[in-house]
Image (cartoon, rainbow, N blue to C red; front, side):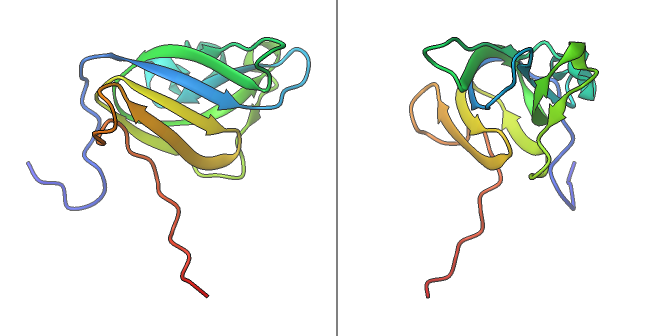
Length: 139
């Protein structure tokens, strides 16, 4: 089966552990979730996402957690309030897109498109893909 344009559709695969670290300044009463196209990410519904991150006084504004995920994912970081009714979505960037097929650690910052990633077996690449900023030509 060939795909002429874009990425192939997501195929269910083995769920793998994804460690997450997200820098996100929040207001009292807000929590941080990843919300996106997969059931674990709430199918774009913040109140249904199972990927809720935590923080404490010594690590704030970095929120962290783990999730079992796999396949082609599209998501945003969301600061959730009132059970998802009053949520603050990333608005300065396009949806984040990753293909998860091996355990990986991801670091990102709210409303900044770069995702730092590190595979579990050490730097071999291919664990996750993210949009790469366009190269800036030299002056």
